[in-house]
Length: 393
Ligand code: NDP
Image (cartoon, rainbow, N blue to C red; front, side, top):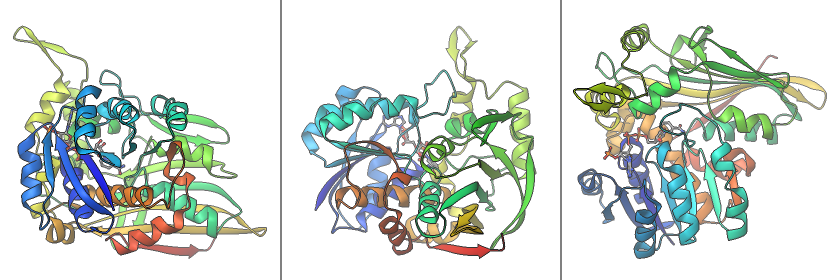
């Protein structure tokens, strides 16, 4: 029986809170804290169970530490924004609490996706006897665990991995992002990057693309992008020769994005507007729909999975592991869209792993560094069933 403090009451925070509330044998007490208290209270009002809520600006470790001291959680689950990661990790160290998140730290003034800032906390978490689990959403998160599961059960060596993320849903808006617009657009507009034969190769943004026939969806154009799990998987998967990440985009989305970029609305440096500095991308976020508001009319499915090739007992093998998630079914269950759902459910399961001791070590870790089996079992039980296909190599 444990106490969990969830930080961030957006689309993902709503899912995490609903899903934790569904597992009372692990999550005895829940506190949802975020910058805007009314958003925490609105989520709390949807639940059958009573939970606590709190106003919190997590940019300052002292604020989070104060809440940790009063609520006394066993784990802090951070689904605010990547900007808060380090401040919340500092507060966890000071308060003697374990930590989990779904997205790696990035400084506000530089859209750089790497684990170096958070991996630098390894020694401090180890010495404090505390655990931090990084990137425990779907991708990163489950994508890493699919690789660890394949490594454990199907391969002696995995040679190639292609992580493929397809959202074939339609929310009815001409342009909206499925998770925080600022973080999403920073990610998509960066240069593409993949790893092959021991080195990183880069491409111009969204210039490399292929068609893939996604199960339960059909053929979709997917674009090569950089994604943070590549950095840890390169270190943790045996025998890897190449790893890439792909995401599908519709033409309507790409056209809007191109126009917004061309007119300067995706800039992350401040510009002077009527005598005060504003960041165009932050202003754009303020006028776009909130991710948590998209669920109501969302139709269609997502398919996220890993295509892997390698060898087992000297024979070549090809394995595809994926999950399909239906936007409307997520909305019926907990008023969420599938991108928030596929992120929030693994975050809750990661918390179960840590709080039940199934995954327990001191230090800072990525999800593929633990036994994938109990996590994979929970995915089936909590709404994200997966499929393994053995294909002709
Ligand atoms: P939202 O924008 O919907 O929610 C973010 C929430 O964090 C908001 O409630 C916001 O408050 C709150 N917040 C922001 N700053 C602070 C702060 N300083 N202190 C306290 N609370 C704060 O985003 P999502 O829910 O869509 O995404 C949440 C996280 O999940 C992001 O980090 C995103 O990158 C990650 N993610 C990970 C994925 C994965 O598969 N690994 C996939 C999708 C998302 P307010 O409402 O006041 O603005």
